[in-house]
Length: 137
Image 1 (cartoon, rainbow, N blue to C red):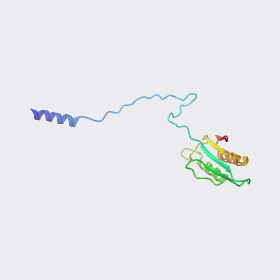
Image 2 (image 1 turned 180 degrees about the vertical axis):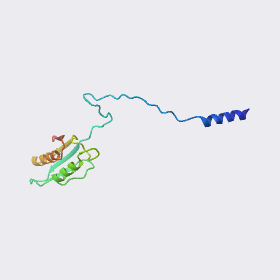
Image 3 (image 1 turned 30 degrees about the horizontal axis):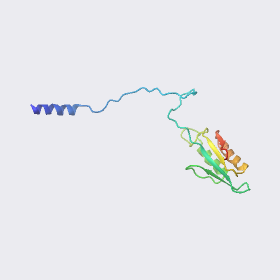
Image 4 (image 1 turned 90 degrees about the horizontal axis):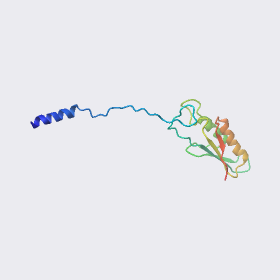
């Protein structure tokens, strides 16, 4: 009798399907307020690209430009323009930043105005539309 019980137990163990069945759940995600078309609810707000500008002397060629982050550091405003232009998203799958990506120009308190404006102009010439100055303390 015990042999029959063990045979039935083994038969049930072998023929049982242990995989959970896949189910489909309908999910209604909320839309962002004020948006006409639904956006990706998991999209993060982009961190701004910060450009530090410092004057190192009274001449127009005496300045330093630094990008905050893991980016290649430009030596001149032309190199900054080249980096920003090559990083602009022109079509899907190319570039790093869309044209609306925030770019913050952070001049030092002693930075000459022409250096701050040249950094601003480099970003605008590259095609970015959200370029701002950060007030100096």
